[in-house]
Image (cartoon, rainbow, N blue to C red):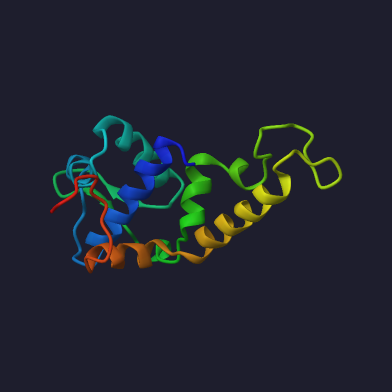
Amino acid sequence: MFSKACEYGIRAVIYIWSQNKRGIKLGVKDICKEIDAPEYFTAKILQSLAKQNLVSSTKGPNGGFYIDTDQEKMRLLDLVIAIDGDSLFRGCGLGLKHCSEQHPCPIHGEYKVIREGLTRLLADKSLKELAEEVSSGKATLSTVMVT
């Protein structure tokens, strides 16, 4: 559903959030190790998010990525749109250019319901909430299953 860039970006920002309350600035290497993501690709994503003021960063030996107070109200929807754009929320499920209520594609009605539900989910979830689920152990960002 989301691009790989968006998946890595979401996981990275949630991880940064989960460590933020400890006052830690995280380097890309540490973030990528924890979320099982490629370092160079994730660094580019985080740099882009920093330019859009969705995460903060500082350079130098004590530098890294962190969440600032002006970013605390960020919703998952903000992050998805920043990385993937909004075409997922307004396009045709089959990719048709002229799909509309008046000229629907075969899955128009069902896709509209799914798209609206996804938009609500992403708008209702804050990254802070998701990070708290990870911090408390209710959710994980790891792709490795521990048994």
